[in-house]
Amino acid sequence: MNTAIIAWFELKRMATSRTVLINQFLLPLILIFILGNALSGWFGNEKEFEQPPVNVGFILPEAQGELPASMQELVNAPEIQDIVIQHILSNREEGVGKLRRGELDYAVVIPEAFDERMGRGEAVKLELLPGRDHNLNLVADTVFTTFMADANHKQAEAIVFGGVQALAVPASASDGKPGGASVEVGQLSEKGGSYSAAQYYAASMLVMFLLYSGLMASSSLLGERESRTLYRLQSAPVSPGTIFAGKIIGCSLITFVKAAVIVLGSMWLYGVKWGGHPLLLITVCVLLTLSSMTIAALITFVSRTAAGARGLMQAIIIAMTFVSGGFMPLPVEFFQKIAAFTVNHWAMQSMLRMMLDSETGLVLSCIGMLAIITAVLSAFAMITYRKVGYHA
Image (cartoon, rainbow, N blue to C red; front, side, top):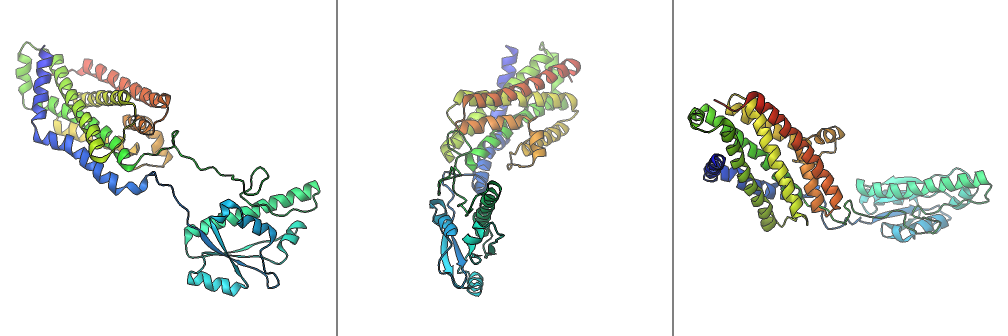
């Protein structure tokens, strides 16, 4: 009964605080809007990337008026036709001039008797002339260097196995059929979706601000000690454990309300889709709340002042958010290894997999790791409480 009364007054005190309402309820929704719009270019969307075609000038020998058969087969392949637009040129000077003027994106100088020399196994090279656009140059380089690599492979086979002729085969050929697709375009997620910037930062801010709820608990616990009101509470027929539990429960209740506001607010205001696992999402929020309160308890037990506890907890939360990619996805392997030991990483992975409609087993595996970390933190908090306790 005493615990419920203390929890109710703690909940009422925070619910009527203007600072709590702004920093804990309004600020996360503002940050989701700002980050979701400002960094949307870093994340995929439902629109597929369309590769612009490359205008390629083929510079032929003077006596040759058309492309060699092997090269013609390459550029006529269905996949290559959408990428390479061919232009026949008569000399190298014309090709260089068009490249400089931007009339061509790329040029290929084809030597004399290209197919015949390839068939005899002689050394033959294509001269590749890049244009102004770096990205288009990469596309063209990939097409023609892969073509020559495949041609060299065919030549080696003919020489080793005694073949008569080894003409180049288009790089896009697979299973022996010209024009067969050797690359299949897919999606990273199992159901063919990808999360948006708004979804990513909604999950990130939800995790971070649920952890910040522990800061309210720590400030409240240490505030009673610094203001000397803890003496009065302990003079009443109430145990220190009851006071401690009541404050933790009150902060946990306001945290659950905050989680609901962030989830529902991001859905209604920004159209964030949290996936089809509401019970699993609630489970993640509960585990995050427990982790937040246990971290707050540990910091309260080892800190002497509320200011010191506030600074330490803020440093821990910001560090965990950073290494787990909460501010921006980090491709660095070093940070990814560290993130595996943080609450933020497994909570975010659980939410993002829900958003992508991943298999339930994958979501549960992330929640399981989050539960293990929460259990370890809770064990440390209980051990520390028995040794230190909460007293004036």
